[in-house]
Image (cartoon, rainbow, N blue to C red; front, side, top):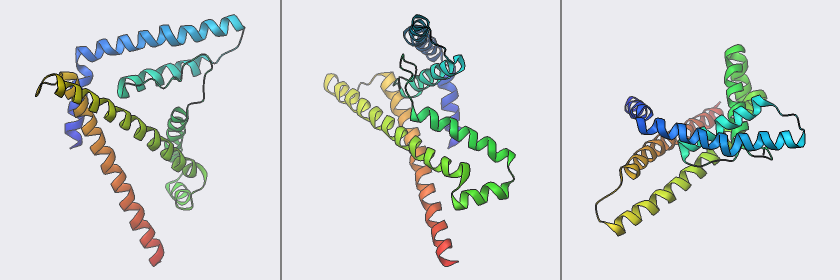
Length: 195
């Protein structure tokens, strides 16, 4: 199944239309986000971390390409974005797992301390926000499908079909992952009770 998803993703990412969307999205975000922030910082005489600004730019453009929604991470007030913070924390926890002996991080995961405790909380944050994006996309697709059905029975735009395909594949993967986690947790709890 994942091979088919990978092939579909590669096909979409290599399509010229996606490349045009990538360029347009990045240009718009640079013009309406990065330049405005830099102008504001310059007028105010403030010091700003360019690395942070470029991370925000990358995060916003990635979210816009993947979900179709702008989280607004790159704006004049430079808001705290829980999703971006959670992603950074998850990446850090994964790196630490490669440095720390497996017995140590497995123990930390078992007793829920250290980076694994933070990782657990970050996963909840990520799941909550991804669930929100899925819900928004589902509502949007429902409106598109309804309007298409009302306009002309049986005809749907290619974009709606692609969106539905991406949504279905993502939702299926996400649902399977959640089921697997739930089952693993139940098995772990049962083993814990029997020991």
